[in-house]
Length: 411
Image (tube, rainbow, N blue to C red):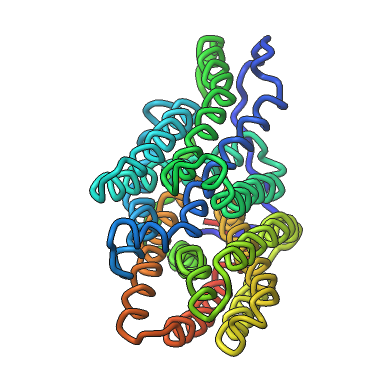
């Protein structure tokens, strides 16, 4: 591991392709539409958990698995993605993942419990592929603006989550088909993203055909990545932060409803929290890219997470909107900062993809414990106090990991 300062990665030179498919606006549009899908199908289900639980006769623990299974398989699928991108190319892998994601959304609403969980598995694997592919793609296409572009696409991910969380219940009423019609409708967003991404697949084929000169040497992989403390610190920062996020994605509306808030208002609070995440996801990577160290940002995100959880513990209904605002900034900022660490702590697109594979694998395997663990703890204790207390302790773990991940060191 070497220490560098203000290191800028070099992009491999590729002959220009005289095609409209190479227009940057097409690439940006494709990235943004793909990013819209990466959280929407998960956030859409949160306001529906209670209805799904009652309709299928699921326990609280089994209901937690609806969110846990996709997160778990994000961790399982992440290490496989670098191999797929090397073999098939990033553009084709992204297109395939978006199509598979749409298929998983449809499978999840087939009227049977096995299909529900099978759809969750498919969704998790598809999101894993996108999670790992996108940082390397951004670093390759925008080598001198990687942190800023990370902020743009992480913000778009949260915009998709916000739209999904806020629209799920209204869609249920408009479509008249219950929770299945509402959740299934999000497959259309995946189809739109696939169509928008198709030009990038065609462009990549043209570029490969246009290459006449010998290719530049490929970047060497990061040696002994899984033994490097920095890689583990980034993984823990992302993993524990994501555990907190997915726990609240799964249960925040239920926590508020169990304390006396109406289901509709609880859904609005949850949607508002997702909306506020947009600000954190956009601004924090921009700030991170201007700093040689990001330790202060990491500690701030952890402190805000702890403050929001404390408000939910002390005043779950009267303080719900304030808690949602604070948690929104913290969770969006933590997501953006975690993704920024991947591009800031590596010197090449290949290195970013390799580190992304590790951090996503470790991170989402940790995060998968959150929803089901919270459901089991709630079932055991009969309330949400113990769950929120555990999340408060985990905010300190995020702070410690972020302190290490934020130092000015490049893998």
